[in-house]
Each structure stands twice: as C-alpha cells, then as structure tokens.
Image 1 (cartoon, one colour):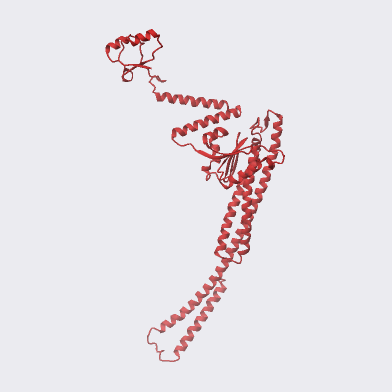
Image 2 (cartoon, helix red, strand yellow):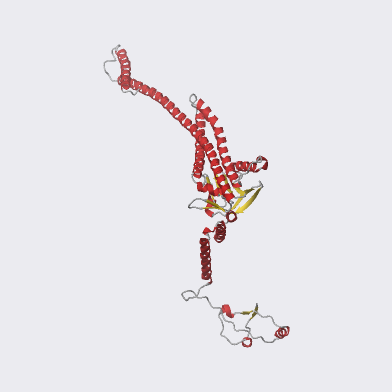
Amino acid sequence: MASVPLSSPSQAGLLGPPFPLLPPPFGACLRYRLPRLPTGLSSSVRKGGLLPLPLLVPPRAAGGKDGRAVTKEELEEEEEEFEVTKEGEEVNQETGGGSGATKEAAARGSGRFAADYVSLGVREPVYEVIEVRSNGRMSTKKISRRQLLKSSGLRLRDTRSVDPSLWLMNSMPSLLVREQAILLNLGSLRAIAMYARVLIFNYNSPGGKAFLGLLLSRLNPRNINGGPAMPFQLEVVEAALLSRIQRLEQRLMKIEPHVATLLEVLPNRLTADVLEQLRLSKQALVELGSRAGDLKQMLIDLLDDPHEIRRICIMGRNCTLDRLSDIVECTVPLEKQIAEEEEEEIEMLLENYLQRCESCHGQAERLLNSAREMEDSISVNLSSRRLEVSRVELLLQVGTFCVAIGALIAGIFGMNLKSYLETNAWAFWVTTGGIVVGAVAGFFVVYSYLRARKIL
C-alpha cells in the first residue's frame, strides 16, 4: 500500500476530480494500491509526472434486516451463530453414520470446549498419566483434557468418573463402556482402557501401583505360556478387578485374626485399651464391607445388562450393535463368532469375581456381626455391674437414713434445755438404746419394703 497525503489544494486538484472532504477516518489519508508500471512510465512518475487516480468511495456500513447500520461486533455475532447452527445440523445428520461421525462431533465439541476455556480465562486441566500399550511398553506423559477427549472419543461428562480432582464426589466404583473406551473407577484406581492402550491416573496410589504391576505381568509374553491371548481391553478389565479384589482380601486376612483374638480376650478383660481396639476393628470391618458391597453391586448391575457386555466385545472390530434388537452385526462372520465367544468369557469372568467379592463381603459381615454381638455382651455385662453398684448404693442410702433419724433424736437432747431427764442416771442408757434399736428396726422395715416391691 502507498499513502498520498493531501498536502495542498493544488495537488488535490491534479490527482483527480474534485470530491467532498470525507470525515476524519477517511479524509486524513488516501490509500490505494499502485499497479505495476513499465520502466519508462515509472521513471516519469518519479521525476514529477502525474498519475490519474480512481475516485475513492468511502466504505459504507452494512445494513441489517431492519435497514439500520450494523456494527462490526454484530456481524461477528451473526457469523458465530451461523457457524454454531451449521455444526449442530451436521452433527444431527451424521448421528447414525457410525463411529467416524461420532469422533468428528467429539472433536468439534472438544475444540469448542477449549475455546470456552480460553475465552473465560480459565486454565485447562492437564493430567499426568502413565500410558501402557498392548505390547507392554510404558511411558509417563502429560495430557490436557482437550487432547484426552479428542484421542479417546469421550464426552466431557464421561471424564467425571475418572477425574482425580473429583475423587470425593465419585467414590462409588463404576465401569462405564463407551464406543472407543472403557472408564474404570475402582477406589484409588482410575483408568481409561482403549483398544491398544490404557491411561492410568493416580498411578502412585496403592490401587494404581497394584493394578500396574499386575497388568505388566499379564502382558509379559513369558507369562502367556503359549495360550490364546485375550483382547487388550479385557486384560485391562480383568487386571483391574483382580487387583481390587485382592486388596480387599488381603485387608480382610489382616483384620480377621486380630478380631478373633479380641473376641477371645474381651469377656475376661474389660479394659479401655481392649475396648478401643475393638472399636477400631469394627470401624475397619464396616469400611471393608461397604467397599466390597459396592463392588458386588457394580458387578451384579453389569451382569444384568448384556448390552454393555456386547459393547465390550465389539470394541475395536467392524461391528455394530442394534439398540432396539440388541443384535451384533459384523461385516466379517468370523468376527461375530469371536464376539459371541468373548461375551461368554466375559460373563464367566464377571461371575468368578462376583463370587470372590461376595465371599469377601460375607466374611466381613460375619466378623462385623460377631463384633457387634460382643459389644452387646459387653453392654449387658456392664449393665449388670452397674446394677450391683446401684443396689449397694441403695442399701447405703437406707442405712444413712436410719442413722440420720437417730442423729436427729440426739440433736434434740443436745439443745441444753431442761427436760428433767438430765437428773436421772439411767436416762442416758435408755435414750441410747432406743436410738440404736429404732435405727436397726427402721432399716429392716425399709429393706423388707424394697424387697417386696422388687426394687432390690
């Protein structure tokens, strides 16, 4: 671009036909694009020759639907609304088109989500995960939420179950099956299993370490022993369930002998230390039974839903699952047969771990019931002891009452008033004997009354 300022009226008249002066945004400087000129003509222009310029027309504001001028911000808003509407129509048209349309829609959604983060000025979450591939290779990487959604084909709400920052809200175990991934939330273990890799969150937690060690040992070719290998996602699911149940069983084996020892000692030793150990053991059994019960309920729900099991079987294959008829359709008949066989294997696998989980849960409940019965027995024992103490206290109170009556009589004779008894020598012994006999007789009368009313 070249700029030719209007320095004088004569130069303005020579440059082109006269036209009215424009407002400040346009009259301050005239801008035009110089065309390529021949060598001779360009030299004549440099020497002071004149070049006719076209008439410059000031830019006109765009008109809206109602005829008024539209600003630049309104035009940008209309363009954004048009793009959003167009993307929504494309997603609706491609809903039944298969996994490709779903992946594109997820990618557009993740891009829009990242744009919202940038516009709001919020830093996008970045997760530090361990990636384990189907060949056993392991690597540590940092991945943003947008990259995670784009690579796994998940939606934003799907990541809530595995987000480490939401562990207080998502404490219940879950196994969510999606088209391209399986989301695992088993206590401190949070992972996303895909066709050829798995991403492990919180890999330094006890659950993450146990799962990682078990998975790597299962992926080791030396441990296969030449047998047929299961699909990678099934290996991940089995390793996750096995590590979780093994941790529950190990904790149960650690608590059971301690509780048995306390049950043998407690009837004879009611000390504060032993009672505190019983309380801590009972608390640990309640927590263990709750975790085992939640895992058992998750497995039961998964076994009662064959649709989710079939979705696991067709993952990574050219197969589709009809939602209405719940029938697997594959382009290759062999893949359909393999998927049906894997469905039976998955059901047997879940049944096996369900039995182990029920056994662990049942044993924890039995120990907990024994601890509660021991607490009831201790309560009864303490109540009987308190009853004995109350009986002794009642007898002492009756005796104190009878003696207090005698003290009242002695106080009456000690008022130093003349009663003409002080002149007789036998009056002292008669009064003392009467007080003692009266106190004893009153005690037995009150005691007989309490026995008759079954208070003692």
